[in-house]
Each structure stands twice: as C-alpha cells, then as structure tokens.
Length: 182
Image (cartoon, rainbow, N blue to C red; front, side, top):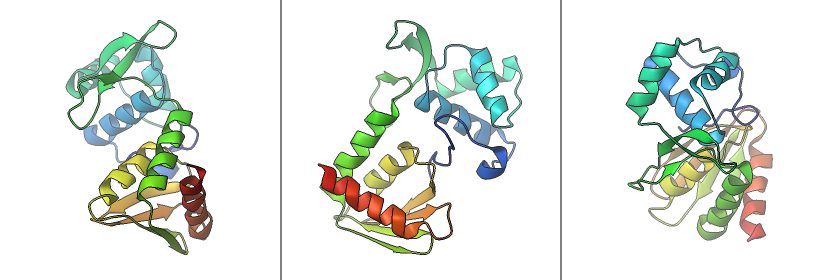
C-alpha cells in the first residue's frame, strides 16, 4: 500500500490513518506530506504532523529529514521548500506536486493501461496489460484520493480498497471515467 488515506491533501485524522507510533510510520507520513504540499520549515512540518496526531521534537524531525534525504529547493513562488529525491532513479528533487498534476497523470495512465474495472462491495479489481499493474497502483497511491484506503498490485491486476463499505462501484466507475477522459 502507498500513501493514500489522506483526508484533505496533506491532512487526515489519526483514527482514519491507524498509524503506529513508529519511526517508520512517522517517516512515511513526512514523505507523504513533502510530496503533497509545499513545506517551508521544520516548524511548519511539525505542525502538519501534529494535525495528524504525530508529536515530534525538532531534533527528531531534523534527523528524520536527513535520513530521508530531504533537501531545500526553490518552490514555484521562489521560496525555499523541502523536497525529496524522486523514486525510480530520477535524481531530480520533487517538492509538493499539485493535485491537478496527480489527477492528470492518473487519467493518462488509466487511458493507457486500464483494461477493465469491476467492483464488489468496497473492492475494485482493475486489470492491466501484463507487467503494468504496479505502475498503475503506484499512480493511484500517489494520487491521494481520500476515498481509497490502499492498493495491492500483482502483474496484471490491481486491487483497490475503498473506505466506504459500498464504495467499490462508484470508484470503478471513476476509473473508467478517467480512462475515457484522454
């Protein structure tokens, strides 16, 4: 599963996340925040974490940022923001990506990769060409759709779990709509 489960971009409730109070969970939350929004300072990051029920000292936060390889780069407005190196070998640091960009990327990938979308209860099963399921699941996880609890990917199948016990049908239709938009 990825970093889905964020209520509003960059914010969620601790009960909804059900994250353990571990270093790994804290660092995963920091990564999600840095990818979802522009964070200008450690104190701003500490406040965002506190909104999620994660209390952290400045020293611990500083160590976490070093361990995650966070660096400061110029944001779109010219101010310095924290960024993480991209996954997959791309060394270009990425600071908060807008929801519009994430939605456009997901729509493009759905148009290119989605073969079928079927639902049962709160589960959506997406079929892709062989080898493409992980790629689509990662895009879904990064898209930060609040209705999605998480994804599991195989070779040509992605299982998407929705938060709403009966939300699968609506989410399957949403994926089909995204595929038709391109």
